Amino acid sequence: MNKRQLGSRYEQLAAAHFEKRGCIVLEKNYRCRQGEIDLICRDKQYLVFAEVKYRRSEAYGSPAEAVDCRKQKRIREAARYYMYSHRMGEDTPCRFDVVSILGDRIEVIENAF
Image (tube, rainbow, N blue to C red; front, side, top):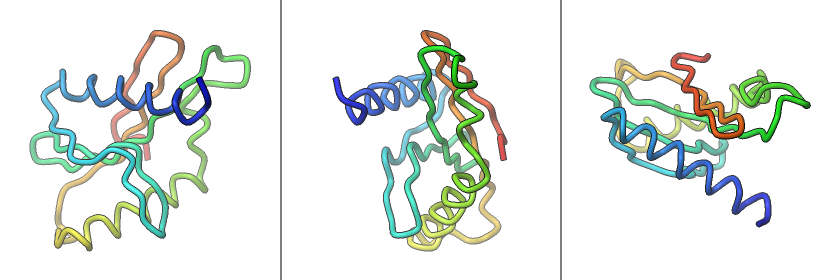
């Protein structure tokens, strides 16, 4: 299994996790010139932009630590474009989550940045 397939597998797990929590998955792997967003969901009144990170172990740090300032900026820019292109106002409540997958454990960090 290559990196792309592995990433896709864990993004599917994260999407299923959000759905179990009652969220509606709107987009998977949303791409635009500004960047990429792994998952875009609706959680009650919130529009959720989620970054999924997987690590087999913590030998190279936790999965969430991989979402650095540069990555956060690109996700915010892509989210801004998504909202603009879907005619959503700036008053649309949204949040940025990180889905940290370590081995078999899935943790959603709401409002991570």
